[in-house]
Image 1: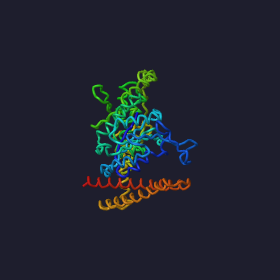
Image 2 (image 1 turned 45 degrees about the vertical axis):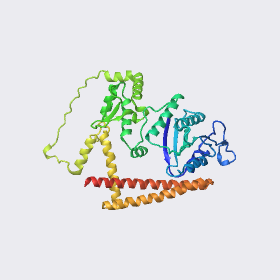
Image 3 (image 1 turned 180 degrees about the vertical axis):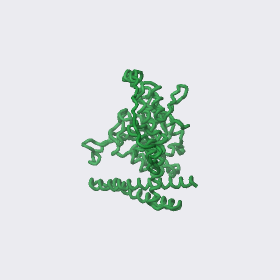
Image 4 (image 1 turned 90 degrees about the vertical axis):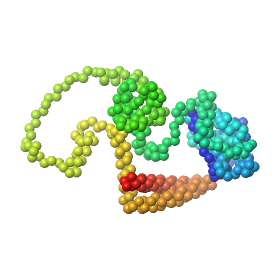
Length: 432
């Protein structure tokens, strides 16, 4: 299984070429010859050499930058997008470094042929084997600029999938689009979102299901409706009362329809007898004996509970807290979303009170100040990164990293305040 991406480079061709050739991010050399970096102790880790796979397509790997720059100058096209950077990442444990690099070189030849210069480098710094492609934006023979649009990305992905199939590697059947930023960070913080709530509901329903009817019933009790009609192209899950459904494969690999059917079949083989006995076992009829109680006084003279105390007891009853001993029912998806919305409104109210924001102009000024602060923090953090590249002292590196982490945490707080302030403005416009 390979994941691909491609994007333009506007700032510096040298930076991206040096990144692709960085020996600290790779572990072996070219397919034909191994590059050794033993001359410098900084290039060895735990007694083993750091080396890399680097291959030039239509250029020499050692002089890739000079050759690409010469082509740009020959056709007078040194501005705009100076290059394109792409990657191809494989599933952990599925490929060897040699196979990974061979697939990368083959992909570059199929994608760009002999028209563009490409530097292919295999890295392992993220824990998975992946290839980097640095593509010159100017054509080698006619000087034509490389047109990188959606069609180009889909072609790049399709060629990568074809190569994976030729080498009996897995492919992604239903590639997912880019996760919205709000959902990505909400899931990273552990907050409930539409997708992870659906995943939790499916996991809970699958624990008590041995067939499709059990699964639908268990999901309906949690506020979801499953549509697995074979006449439809995709199986979907939607919240009861909502018109928009979510395709199951968008929830992840373990939540598409074949995966659900496989888990149900495992339940049926393991627990069919237990579930069937619990479902169809005879239930003895129990006739409760009534209790007789004597009331002293009269209901008409009992003092009624009102005010906030009465409202509190009413909410406790609605939530199942009172009377005690009742089985607690899980919150519905609608109520969970309302709780998330309530948390957002609470953060907005706290921001307004803390910063004493009385008008929309005050909120706009606050956002502008935070954005300026973000730029200052970003510039300071970039200086830390620049110092890390040049620093060789271990103690000083630890101090720089600690300073970088503090700046990153401060930027996260500013980013959250900016987002909260923007929500205040949007809500104020709706209230008008």
